[in-house]
Image (tube, rainbow, N blue to C red; front, top):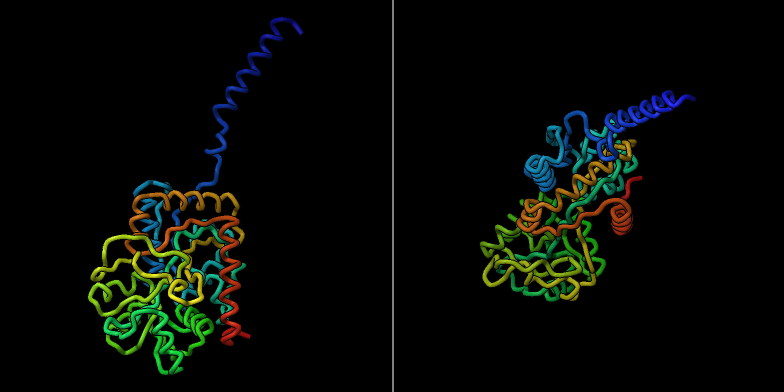
Length: 338
């Protein structure tokens, strides 16, 4: 090869390399991005806890410009949320459908014959845990969980425990409480925690296991009072809510003599089955960013949830443990569908 030919070859090689460097995207640029509008599918009705969860996430994503695509929210809450999960089954491989739910994603098929299974969903993340408390009427003679449960034990099936729906989290927790404390309630299901709060305030039931946010209005008014929280630790300290008590002043149920370490419900996000792994990674990263914003932290504090981001192996381990514990209750109660 002549010197000129060698030089020309070098120039051509350099030019080609420069062209490749300019035209090929970087690894970050090549990562998956949604290429059409995103639908947030809410497995509850408008105004419910899951609906508020999804709409807060939507607002934070828009404010912080975490995606270029518009996001619409649709409610498919029929069948205790089954409608939303069945919808996900009809769109396998579609990463534009993002499903917002709770542990009902993997627990509902145990207690009802439904047209979906957990295998029709891909877990993405959990962003928070709902807490549960044991509440009595504000004028109740009982000041501690131990005293209340002793009275229930002395007169089985005379005290009424209210909750949101049948064979759901409230009735599951009631069953756990019965098995642990050796008591027996009359369980009364209502359409949502708001109705259970109203019934307790009106003395139509003796107790409920509502989330903090569901009973806060009645607690502020002195119509109900908390006896303990089903959490491993006390709720965060904060301003007083009722009289001289705030959330952090409520003892854990374990410290109050109830041998239940923890009962919490995850706020979960899913994709349909068979979506690309890099789409899961995209939404995981986006939701992690959401969980780190001041707006998310304000929402968690305002609704008295426990902020906890879980994804990947950690989320799968949590789901496996939660699934097993709930299934034990379903088996004992005879709720499993045949």
